[in-house]
Length: 212
Image 1 (spheres, one colour):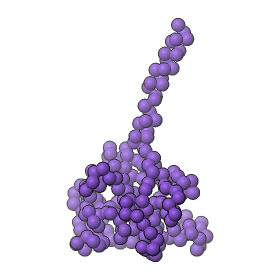
Image 2 (spheres, helix red, strand yellow; image 1 turned 45 degrees about the horizontal axis):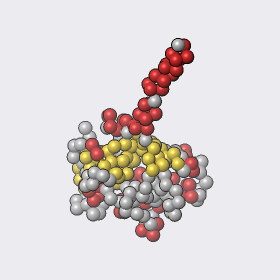
Image 3 (cartoon, rainbow, N blue to C red; image 1 turned 90 degrees about the vertical axis):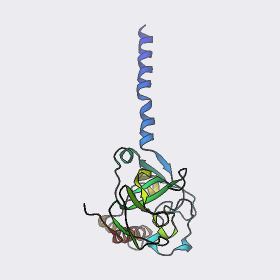
């Protein structure tokens, strides 16, 4: 009886704890990213833009031999809508719900954003419950400059950090001045970091935050 009792207890423990990994991956999935510079399906070529400001953030490998895999947070987004300007997020396309977009939140409700072509107005105030999203190469990106303000409810998750390839492991946050000081000037890493800082300054210069 003791053998069967211990076996039963071990099986019950498995039943209790087995769903935990599934729940973790449900709310913190690892997703393979396709497309470059958060363009998703439009494709990208370095010949389309020589400005480092628009260097791809996602899948920067020009030959596309590797794809980025990233850890995303669904829990805080879906439970409390926790995301901020600058976050990279996944969202359902407002024109094709079967399509998932990967974009950066540029402006939130109440903000005024200076738009880019082909948007018909020079600037727009983001309505309640909406966000303005763009790829990091907005001139070659299927984003709010084409679609307009996006319902925030379409956002599914936000990117925490890249887990693969190992050479890119870590957060995609804008590099700090301390990080830049540790890099060798004129190295590819330094140029990429400076470009990321320039992109953030450029995005922020186009947004007047809401005053609540």
